[in-house]
Length: 162
Image (cartoon, rainbow, N blue to C red; front, side, top):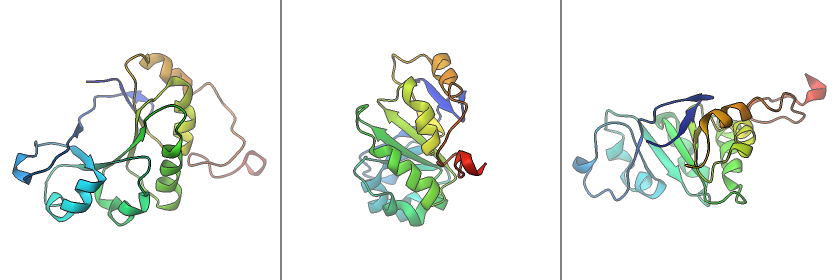
């Protein structure tokens, strides 16, 4: 298993990515997450499973495509294909602030120590780290900035209103 942080603690990742659904009988038991296209196509069948479900979104997908299903999804995975592509920040904020999603929002891909504090502010609470990232160092990054000025998913009041 890769390096994984959940709610600012190292954790075991019990989720399994799954693509290419042919028959639901071929799905592994346990918690799975699937691409949005598979979710849209097989939603009713997937909801009959007894395990937790999640969806992985491309950073070009519209989070509103899963808005009606957020109460049924335990995990939303958002992708950072490269450090300079920040569209997943917006997706996370929309999920938390506009759509009120309370489940796990996981960052995957080019997840770096320098970015996790800001990802958390936007609503991420889980991070799948790149192999070259040290978990203990990343955990320290959450506490390096102690005062934030603007409102975000983790603090709805600006500093002058607190």
